[in-house]
Picture 1: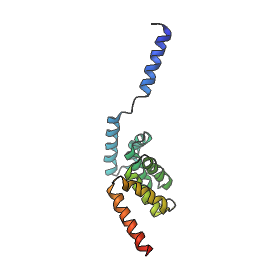
Picture 2: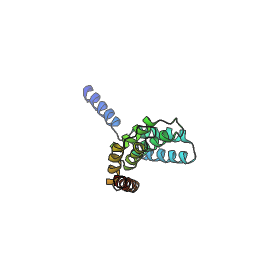
Picture 3: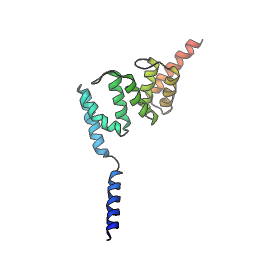
Picture 4: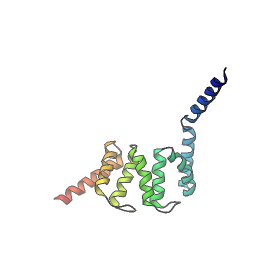
Length: 149
């Protein structure tokens, strides 16, 4: 084999290795370890386990980091970071994150209150059949109708 062909073969192998999908089995193990740490009250360990997963767009990890920042568990409360994590997952169609984001906008806690954005996110989550979103949407719609009379 000519040197140029060898070089091209090595380069293609390296590019293929770099483009390989993330190790999903490892992600699942790390996610579960994060859940165990969270349940044990070790929020910092949970954050450290979930952060790399969130960096790779694991929707549940993004949502969980949003919780940590919203509630100030193992980190300083930070509404902007909480919203950013929820929003990343919400934009990718994660109904639980859409619901959490809606709740933040409804409450106006840690971020500016915005009922219009809240309803938009809540409707998206409810449209997917996510039970907590459907229940909250029914309550909000009923409250709106009562106040409109």
